[in-house]
Image 1: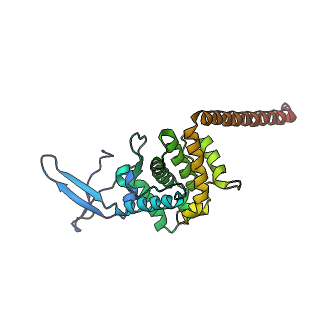
Image 2: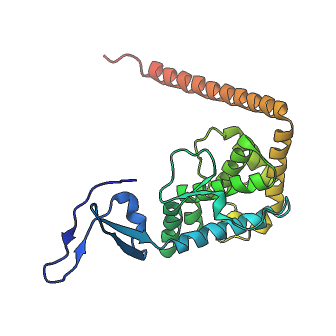
Image 3: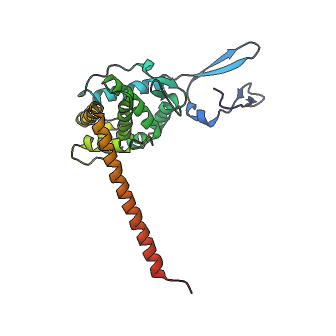
Length: 261
């Protein structure tokens, strides 16, 4: 994959060193140790191979947290990198295996290095993507399939980060939030037991209720579709009501001002 073309330039004629400015997409590599490889031949290449061991460790840490949180549901086993499509940058689309990106992991580690609070680390697109796709695979291991495994991953990512993925799972997220709370009001992205440094086993009961709902939907897809349609109809009525109310308020204000002389 070619991101851009850049020129090698001297860092100073007397220093004996040269430098190259990398594209902004690779900004997260700042400070990462890299191997420099030279591939000689008709078309010589200089290859930078970043040491992404810290990113792999983060994948495994997040998986272990999921494992603790889901242990009341079942055993998801050890983290296996071969279950995922791993790339430097987050993909726009995926089909076969859930994707993980080194860029997301390094962005999270960069936030931690800046001594940001766990809440600031949690509320990010990077955490959303990492937790979502790890949870998709956890759903697979626990017996969820297809769209139910993907939606389960999406709602777990939402519960952790409070960030919407924009994947059209508004209904599933709303139901999952209610199920996780078990009658108590909870706010996605502000659940202490699901924070980056939280004790995820304390979220076990809530995650068990969320998973049970997805299992029920998978076992009864007709009921799932009916509940989904009812929820969207109710939301549409509310939105229309709010829009009409806003329009009436606007017209009333305009009428009270009267025509300008």
